[in-house]
Image 1: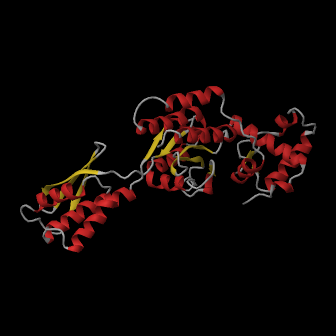
Image 2: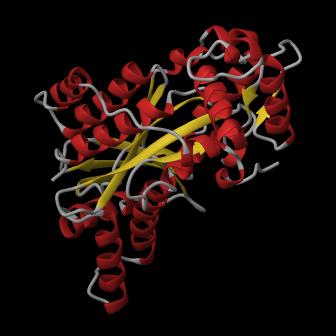
Image 3: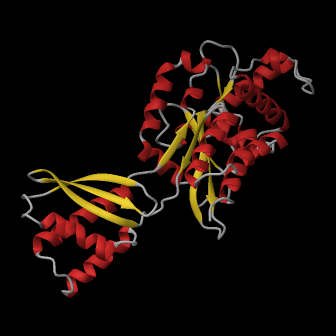
Length: 347
């Protein structure tokens, strides 16, 4: 159920609604009318407050758990608060110093990405996530090694020194010498190219008749490159740190929700698809609970912000995943600042 727009709430309802949401985000507990009656600046009786709370509940902005006489915001209520009432709190000088210091430590960009995920986890007490820029590896060598009658191990060595392996399934055993011919062809003609560039050059060479490879060797070259390009497209590169932060006291009570959340985080393809939705945003995007299909069952929130290289192109996304009871006012600017700091390191 979606609640009414903010403009339909009178000043009294707004004030009480704000206090309930802020109290819940601070303590994680429902807020009762007695607590609200004692709030500074709210000169209303408990009976009047209870009447307003009931109205807010009927409008779908608040809910009353069975175990408490207090109220807590619904996901619709949180969305209304985040979009229209929340006052952001910029990262403190100490927090900015921690982020910039850890990101500026010497090392490859991969280390900075790992550090980013850990920083967000530490500062937000949530799980920190970084979707790594999709960088195509350039080929130094690709070798094809027989491991069974109809199976070949493709070994790719990149210009960055990384070595990865894939299994290639064949319809029939290769003829003697075909694997060596295919490996030599790739290394000699396609070295220094990205996988996409290598596949295009290979197709042009084969279609123009410039290649001396026979049909069996050509098939091995195509299969060897195809398994790499398919995997590079389908496999998300995601760094997640701080899952243990999700196991707070509230989580122990609702262990099924946490188990669902941990399972969601293991599905890196789905998490990457969700983070990818934030790529075109100008600043952090906030996904609350069932607003995103991935975390609908676990009732979790995601705050994600894109980071850009020096040319302004989006190259990845950073963010945090935690319970809907997040300190949005503090965490949203923190995620944005971290994204901006990481972007400065990307060439």
